[in-house]
Length: 117
Image (cartoon, rainbow, N blue to C red):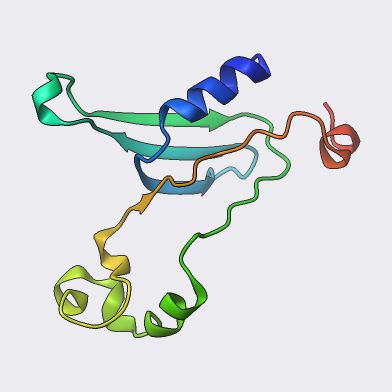
């Protein structure tokens, strides 16, 4: 895919719900599964999107959850919504993360040049 089009596709899911990400079971490709929604009054139906990065040799994902929130969010009860909802900390059990501040495509980097197919 053209890098400009790919960056636009990633920009289109800015601030949406990332449900899953990681390498596929066969470990060659990397995928993002996103629930995209808008204000219901817009009339635009929510959509489940799957972005598959074929022949992916490296993917880097970082969190924007602040360090102090991480420290308060280590209790295993927070990984299930029902047991974590009333606790102080981030409730991982919501089972999604906000795609904020968004994704950045690095089309030309030392890593991409060494691993070019």
